[in-house]
Length: 126
Image (cartoon, rainbow, N blue to C red; front, side):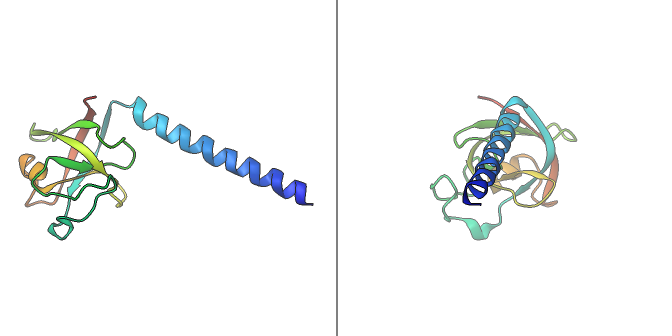
């Protein structure tokens, strides 16, 4: 019975690893994503990001669920044509339907401060 349990655990672990690899590869195959952007609350100013650096509302940075830290992306609002280049340094957003969380400075460049969220296209730059 112990060998059977080990076999089942091994199969489950292999499935999880394969699924993670497939999701990671998918994120990097797609050069442009479309969805909704939001921006960080002021309460996160100075808090550590997932990359370890302190969050700065005045930096042109963003959180993305899967892109590697240090990746540069162009975030464009198709409805207005406004665009901003940001550096991924955190994970998130953690709200369904949102694809990127921006610093306040980046959100201001996209003209989305008053509305809070905006439809965007996120394009890999490197």
